[in-house]
Image (cartoon, rainbow, N blue to C red; front, side, top):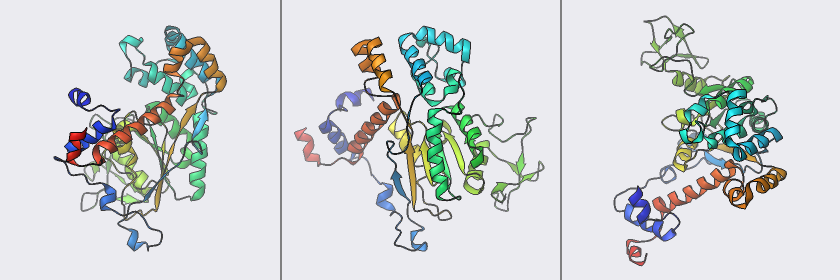
Length: 364
């Protein structure tokens, strides 16, 4: 990878085009849109059964941006102006979260400043405050209210990075039958659903070995008369089939690849992934053909935090131009990461779907 990056510079369009020309010798590029047509409202339901739903990307400026509150900005200020003090106070007052431990770094005092920053922007409870009026949650409320007001039969996915965020959303949106799809589900070491005593639960299956569903739910049976089910599969089955389960909160780690959520009519990126390939795969979990759950389109939303003007002025005065330019001049981490993903997408498309001929290599 290092040798490749030296041979082909990411900031050079000619280098990326050259890499595409070389890859063409050894690869076959087939895209979904080359194989499947999109849903066409002019056609009958039967004629649309083998068509992909259209992707509708909602501009965050239209719906999805939110401004951080004063306590959140103050916590970020301390995080970047007096990091050792912030760590001490965070440990003493609020406690270390599972995500703090997961993303710990020895050289940063056992806490990752980047992930602390993201969690401060995510929820006020991370800094010891109530989440009822958390700015990000209020922005999410608006999106969900709009989506579910369109039809009571609509379903949606929330994609997020952190385990605590999954659990908070499941509680907040219990009215939508929200469920979590993440590593914190009640399960044994093999991933199977268990009861409060740790016993594996069994569910009825049909003659083909598939789980028998009644009103969209697996049917519990005694041991020996069915088979166990993995906790993640149980949550997915409910989302796909249970009319009361309208919302599934999915962690990137558990649900970015290898699973399908075709019951979803919309997807909200609570956080965006840190790499384009991860985001591309995660977004595609809901963009699939499903003849039983035909839908014309899938709508995508992205939540993005914003700093207040007074905060950015204050940080420039305290940090100086150099550090301010490094950490805050280009906006919040959400804004920076979204632009980075857009850049990675452009590079990916240039390498994989670039234009030119093999003769062009000589001119590069």
